[in-house]
Every structure is written in structure tokens, then in C-alpha cells.
Length: 239
Image (cartoon, rainbow, N blue to C red; front, side, top):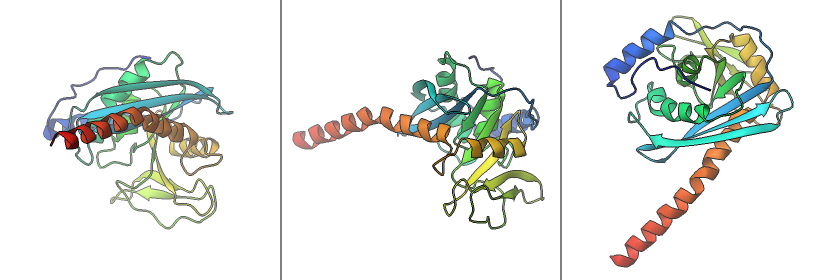
């Protein structure tokens, strides 16, 4: 699958903010209602400070059978700056998506969607470039406030911006465990996003597509960790 090229990646913070503000106006928070037969999960980790490792898994829906995986590694165009993580992570994610033979109908990202100060978190940014329905599923809150969430599975509360706008929801995917932060990425509405997240979270706190993508990045990083450890050992011996 091919991504659209809508802007450069190596930009300063001022230019990145303007890109976010411009692209956020193109995000669609409505669901086209097309059948979903394949659902993807995407995650990024960092073998070292300057490089990113992206993993994408594609599962059948609703039975969640693994169909395909893809991994890509590359340099980070921008250092870590809160609120601008998509400029650090999306380029390598797009490389992974472009290597897929099996095109997903819906994508879950480990990150924010519209629950972002400029309404363009990673899930919205990548979903817009891929032109696919996407959902942000974050483990922690970046933006907005919410009331306490009941302990039972399926309970949720709106996540509101300071001006009162609903930018996402806080969802309990398992009874008694910490909730996750769900927000519209692109081409989906919040209620539909919550329904899909619950449907793909049969056993764990983290939705299965995202959980499998996270596991894939950790497995892919394992040789890097071994190589780093051997390098450190050789360095100690030569001192």
C-alpha cells in the first residue's frame, strides 16, 4: 500500500506545528461503513536514540488470525519532542506499511489520534497519509481530562479538551485494570472506534493488533541488544 506525500519530514518545530494545524483540518471523524475483514496494528520502538524500528501486523477480522507482518528500520528525522512524535515515528511506519502485500481495512496505532493539542496525533497523521480508517490507542494520556472510569470492562468516559470538546474516550478493556486512551485517527467516529477496540481486546488490556505489533518490535530488537552487549564487553576488555 502506498502513502501520500503531503509534506517534508526534516523540519523544525515551528514548521511542524504549522503542518499539524494544516493537516488536522483534513482529518475526517466519520465512518464510511465499509466491511472490515483485515485489521492492522502498528507500533514503533527505538533500538538507539537516532533510529526507529516499526512493526505492523495484519490480522483477519473478527477472528484475529495473523495474516502478515512487516518490519522497517530507519533514522529518526526529529528528536524526541512531546506533541510531535509523529514526525519521529511515522516515516518508518510508512516504510513498513508500504511493504505489505495484504492491505488492511482499519489500522490501530499505539499512540494518540485527535486527542492531541493540535488534533493531529500519530494515528491521525499516519491515517491521513495512508488514507485509511485509523484509531489511536494510547497507554497514557497526552491531552484532555476525564471523570473516573467504572471498573467493569467496556466502561468508558469522554476525554475532553480544556474548552470542553470531546477529543477521545478513556476505555476499560478489562475489568479492574488500567484503562486505555482511545481517539479518532481518521475516517472513523469515536463510538465506532470504541466498538472495534473492544472487539479486538478479548484477553488483554492492549488491543490484540497493537499488542502483537509491540511484541514484534521487541523480538526484532533482540539481536540489537545482544550486539550492544557484546560491543560493551569487548570495550571493557580493551580498556
